[in-house]
Length: 182
Image (cartoon, rainbow, N blue to C red; front, side, top):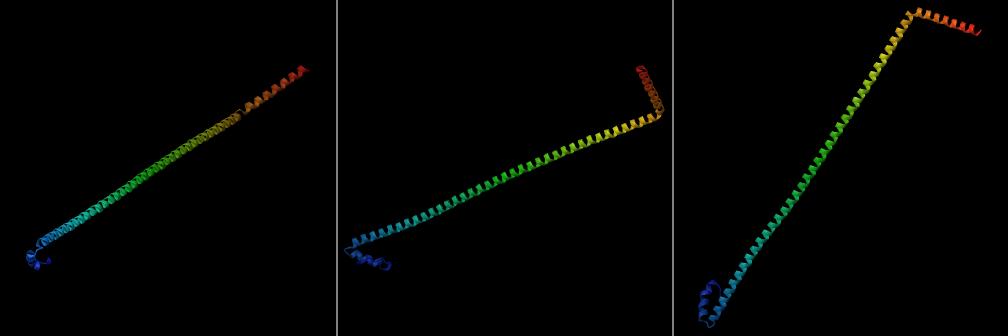
């Protein structure tokens, strides 16, 4: 007897099997086949659950990998950002140093100009004082010459008289010398 598993013939097949001498064997085979199908179904179910678990594991792995990549990218971005900030800070510092240097040079240049102006003013003052002294000296000399000239004009007669007296003395001495030598 052939065991049929179709639904319409199932009842009839079962009755025929019960009458058959191999009924126990057929029942055992059927039960064994049912158990095999059940195990295969369980295996398929376990395979399906395993594939779902693997899929979830793969999803978790992909998510974790993406998270790690995102974290690496964020770290790289943060590092680049810090490097940029550092370069910017250094540039600002260098610019500030350069500005300070330029300011100091400008202050020094102005101080040097101020010293030069003061030196020039001192020199001009000394030259002006020298000029005033020279002018005063010339005025004094001119005044002395003028006064002397005026005095000489006023004393012209006295000087003439003095010269005549001086000449008379010289003549007298000359005669005395001549007379004593002779």
